[in-house]
Length: 186
Image (cartoon, rainbow, N blue to C red):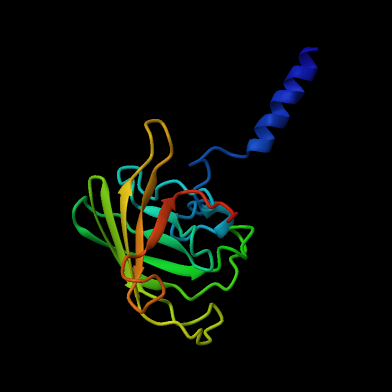
């Protein structure tokens, strides 16, 4: 029985490999990817890129009444109340069933975000190129005004209004929701 336990312990130690710092000549393992460089599969339910900044990282902005558009937003770390940079891509939410395969995906474009307390404003251009670099016939700018809307104990969630300045939404805008997790349109 003792031999069996020793054999099991030896197998566990061998499976784990050498401890860190035991062999300086070997390169260390690569660092895990940040939210900005995470794959879409990892990003489908991404956590904040910076634990001290709840806005940093990947978000999904969904337009329930306009499901041919949705945004995958990645916000950089920043200070509350300051303008921060970010990026977004636009995709067809209605046709997308999996966060790993976004349908009619655009090229990524730079955006700005201004947040203070329970309010957040995202602004940026409509991506005018498909992921393949072909013109998609789109133009204009988006402005998405959001307010924190989750209940205590729930995952962060924002709701508000998205306005496209080139007539897609009308001057009053359409409802918008921003969440960490991707969900299918229904």
